[in-house]
Length: 175
Picture 1 (cartoon, rainbow, N blue to C red):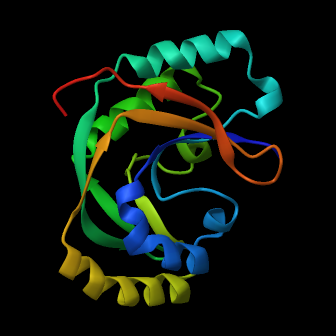
Picture 2 (picture 1 turned 60 degrees about the vertical axis):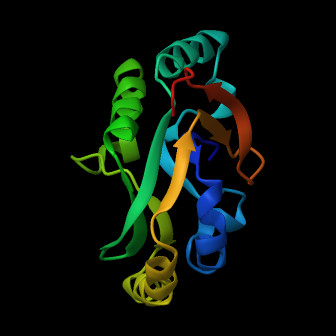
């Protein structure tokens, strides 16, 4: 089924995580770059009207650019991820879009809390453990991954591969 999503691309993390993501995160092979998710899932490409685009543009373009770092290697039982700091701007963007489109809560409403993250491995505990073990030393050596959020990418998968549908630039700031 066709879907779309809002992400913040973290190109600076690619050298550290791309090989692991190809092995342990199925979305990577389908064209999704290293990213922090803002909202997933969102409506299919065929449902997106000019009105929806205008609401999304207005909602996200009011946010300012900001610096963040991927500071911690973390785990959920079946997921290994890098946590951004500060997390609050990601949470605020997620809430802002979700408030405009109540039919599309983050992660289909499966989780009560919004925890921004860059997924490295997802699917099963064994894969997540391998990814965590393989990433621990390089991540410690490299230190936090520094980035700046300047835009939110609206991606869609109507072709089976994820690709950019639209880029929403944030307001310029001193970031």
